Length: 176
Image (cartoon, rainbow, N blue to C red; front, side, top):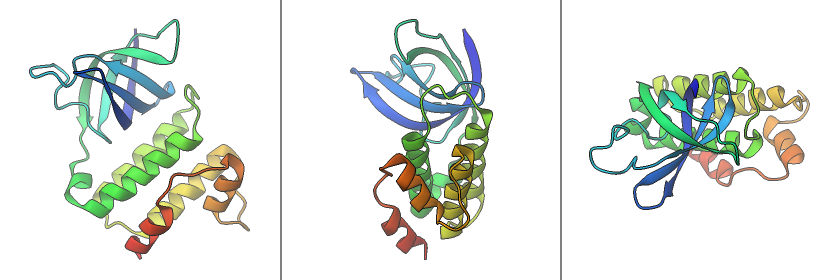
């Protein structure tokens, strides 16, 4: 069994009652877990697994792939202010998508978790601004080792990864 602290970046349905949850964790990097029966009424995981929640999770490493069975999750921080402002939610969503698009599954560096957790915490407690996104992109490019002060960070990330999540320009217009 593996125990870790992680932030939920993405959720996908798994069968009738389950969820596939993509986490950014302190000790395991990007991890995908299968939470069977998570959407079932009365499940012990009900209400604990939502986007951007910070949890202590217990999971079993799979021997055959990168989808690991989730055994339990204890909610540490729901980051409720993100749900009270649509623009904060969109900003958080874009940062999570950008993280998922650029960080490989299983890349074990606690800096990835510190970056996304810090960005989500800051976004939850402050007015949404374009500077939050550009700072996040700069830190992400720096962690990847591709940042150059002469080139905007999003351009560097695009050149390096070839594709970034859609909606950045629209989001920046809304944040202006």
